[in-house]
Image 1 (cartoon, one colour):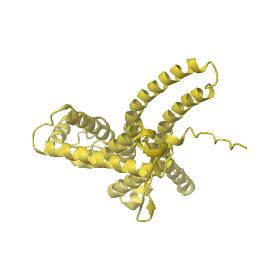
Image 2 (tube, one colour):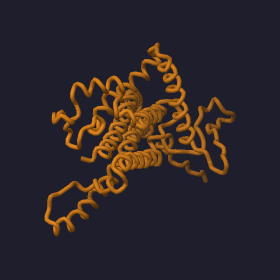
Image 3 (spheres, one colour):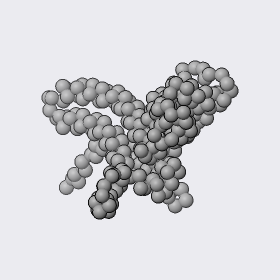
Length: 310
């Protein structure tokens, strides 16, 4: 009696494994798996290796870019100009406008009034000229935001290469990124307002009678704390779902080909599915950039809310 063949797992290429899939012609006897070893008792997985590759790529690219910028001359060549353009875009269009200039950075009071009583809200022309000369106060957050953006971007783009994958299509990876982000937000918030001040700022100031304040403030604080945690949880789910969604669409196209293999429709479905996969694959490259941008923007927004509680 013949043993039935198990149904193929169409999502196998996006799951984490202790091996890499390889083309059959690279290995003997049709073997298509390259097993990964254990390191200090820990089994290495495909996504672990790909994350190390992404981290090393980001490090070496921006180490080289930093050396060129430090020399005093502008980086030359399309390769270096491409990465510099992305970095400057995140700085000038995400971090600086979103976090803004803290009022105390210019000797203003908490209402944005200068020492001469002029209400320029911390954004006067003189302030911008000074900022352009000596650097923007929000630039202190740039290392973290740049790291988030470029690390997520490279992890996303690795999925465009055959037999590799996008680590960000795994909820464990995006969950770890969200945990790092929430810890960073809390660190900067407590550094800015103090431990008690940061946690107290979750509840907005309310002009209420004492009795109502005793009842309502703890309830509102609990709701705000829950919302604070949910926002960072959604940060992980959003990235995971969007990266996984493209692979799901490709898997559906493959399923169309498999289900019509014994039908005359196969001659119509095959080219249509192949065209659909090419289109979705191209779209996923755009999605890789968009999702890296969204992750960096939301991380910047959360930091801004923590360091500017009012």
